[in-house]
Image (tube, rainbow, N blue to C red; front, side, top):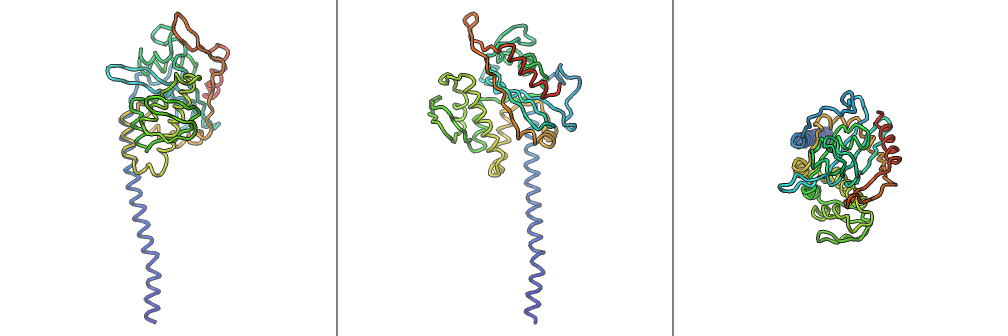
Length: 311
């Protein structure tokens, strides 16, 4: 009987022991989660680079994320080299509408001919950043697309290698055999290191699609970074990832705004529509190459984005 009581006592104790172990694990996870949250907050503080204007001239008030209002972001990949302010190597505009649960994305060719707002010239759109930094780039994109550009995210392409390495490399789908920067890239699925990813995303002259082909490769790398960064295995490298982001990304988004976007707009990211420029063409004016978007197609693109932003 004593043995039975002893066994029964053990049985009663086991749930308590398991419960204590679970509590310890949850507490440890909470500490780990807080550590990640704290590190992310610190990284975002480093990344946060406000601009002089509070809102777009095409807005009457700021976007309210808690009210799930549509907003737009200009993503810029910038080549920042020593003693050179650099140019925006790539420009992608995203419009986000949580009510219809969708994102529209358009890549603007760097050689697109447009009015450089605030500079009084008509030039390649990527020169706007060189002439007047982030604000002139945002104003010029607003002028081209006739929509408010609410936020920007700028990535230093020279430091993109560090970001890719921090997430342990990226996997991309390559649709073109080519060599560039001392590397050879075969068609198909490839796993790239930071140096390889940078070379992969920069090549354009060996691609008959020119800037459009390069934009496709840049999107492949960016999507690869997002996939790897969101994986469970990357949690163990979060310090490296956040350091790499803090060192190479600038944005006027604040930490609490990013939290609100994650909370209220997450469903929109499941439907990303890429708007393709179909009738644009390259031409030379006074011996200089420009990419020209016909007015009819530009008007269609403007209307599509305006409707999506509900402006």
